[in-house]
Image 1 (cartoon, rainbow, N blue to C red):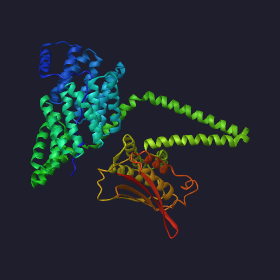
Image 2 (cartoon, rainbow, N blue to C red):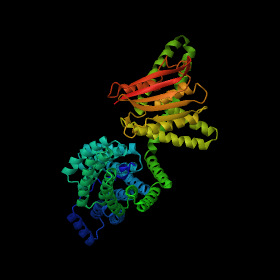
Image 3 (cartoon, helix red, strand yellow):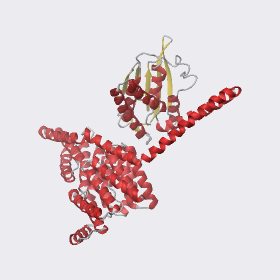
Length: 592
């Protein structure tokens, strides 16, 4: 059983105005606040500093200090202080897995930042918004948030901005199973954190490096960095880092089948996870305890641990909670972009009326300049070809044929016109899942084969919903292959399947079949897409593959030529039985 260390990684919270304080400095601030009764910005900052340093060790006490800062900031109407309070409250609720409340506080902080036109504040909030996206499994917007904050940090040469952004980028790529990219960003962060003695950052940094090496199955380095993370966490008293590193060590020992050590680290992890109130880590600790107890034959303990795991899993997977996250997130984005939407609507109206004028001009030209029609038609065709080429380049970048998007939206419109709201809702849910996967995958060069197959199945399910004659499909992966460890260019198979449906199955006007097989032969990964359609020779004149290669085939060929291994290629075979076309087979050959 593969336990997901990616799900137990925590995040570095960033406050652009905070300082890492020693125990002596913390005691000094507490002493000053105990005797001072001033209601000023200095007191607000002092309470915020205390809350910040205690967030990962004594979160409830930290929240009390933050509330004290809020009371004073609100009384004196000090907006920068209120923004800092709201940001800190957001992290408090984020650590408690209460994402809707966390987003609500971050909205308030962002609003003040925009009112003050404070670029530094807004950029630091990008990091915290990225954390919420990351926790909500919205990896693409999370990475964009962290890259924006990194660019700002490099612009002003701010070590804290740079370190926190790099660390969270490392976590983001770890979440999408790209350990090499994760290690790149985390190791880039290390010397900066070490030079500036950011001990709290280092404890997270070491632990996340342990997670990256764990994902690569390099258990020696994984164990080394997890232990370094524990050393730093003990030095800073950071319970959150301690819980994370202990969970990582439990996982490493589980892989190595060191059952007693794994159980020890799981129990230690639970102590600290309960202390910081993190449900996710408690869930992971219980499932690992169950597995290790089971392996030792301690069935009663295994059952108790599994029941605890189920309780935490159900709590974290509450559908209403997830809906609330999405609702709050969308509300936040919509409030930010009202002006942009208004401008976009005005632009669309201009384009619409411009289109009418162009159409009217074309009609007048046709009537009064009939003799020049052929010349003008040729110009229009040339312009159309340029537009098509531009669309092809965009499709190549997004790795999804834009015609499919148009067809999908037309299908939704059809369901609504036919008064089939349930079908329309089902289609939209699958369509949104597919679009999210495509956009996420387009940010990287390769993805695991399992993700490619998952995205492909969503696509075929959507096509099935809108076709008059649904088709069946089968995906056959050689049992000797580990699909989680095979990486291929994202969405490389989808254009081939789309081609089979469009040129093979739709013209057949009958139930069709698609067989996708993946094998390894002579050092090559061979992906085969076979259909029982009408064959290339029987395609319509417009879709005849001999006269003009299809868009899907063309895009795939072009992508294969851009791969590092120049021997990658695409082969097409016509399937014929008794001189009668019975379908087409397209193979993608990817050398190791």
